[in-house]
Length: 380
Image (tube, rainbow, N blue to C red; front, top):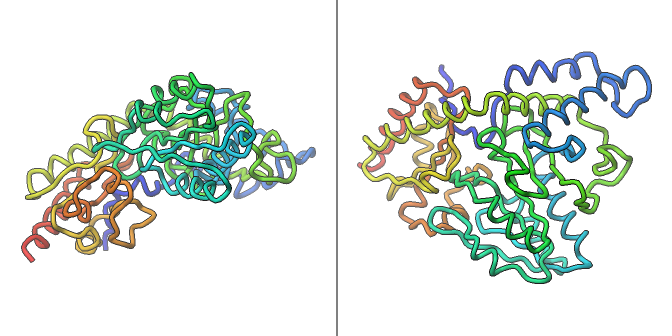
């Protein structure tokens, strides 16, 4: 039996072979604690330092501005909670937007129970945040703006540099969740103008359970993990050396091969869309047609249910219905609701995301499988 074609790279990615090799020594022989002052701590300590340099390189920042975490969710929690409580003597207002990942939205909802006010900026039909809306939302009490770099469901890329400039002009720290963008599009923190940026390792061919948070020098979020003095005193806990080494290598590969990977993923995505456009009777694209991740296609099939399509193609294609975190339900995603996608379209939405390993043959087979399933369900 052949395995289904994998088109859910925004959900998670396989480990790159080079990443596995970078991790291998810390699984097989280099078991030491990087905080140890004896011989066994030397190689782990060097590996952590090298990974910090590699991660900083893809972000164009100083290695001292990189803090390793357990993943994107922790990075978002650290950034938002840390900055909210650190700035609570100045104000209690946070600004985010309606299409954020739950790892941001749930943190903001929690802060609302702790005396903070949160403004959730609307988005337009493409999922874009307006600079004008951000300007109007800022108050003297605003202590943080958090807007995602690229949306996990529809792929829309926000104008982060413009939004961050608005925050900067008012002395407000700016955080972006870049879990979906690192390794797919440029993520130069100097060009973006952000103060904090979250990375999730398993979205860029590293392991699950590892991530990073960029914290611009001079920005001081309240400590999120308390204990000993690891990570320059900013995040306690014995370092996940194997995961950190893998993340560093993944960032090095992503930086090295970015242009080639962007081109390949876009070509595979566009091949999929073109093939389905010619065979699916009623289909629409969600998200911005151009300001979008090169690998992401959110496609709606009018009058159908996403889970029924997934059931039909399950042995042939692995994709997701709306956000990956809610793939087992047919509830309309909060992203599509925020974009005002009509119900008859939204409920039949699938997210297809290509990756480095995707091949033309896989796309051709996926088109056949999806088109046939849509045709069968449309006739039923």
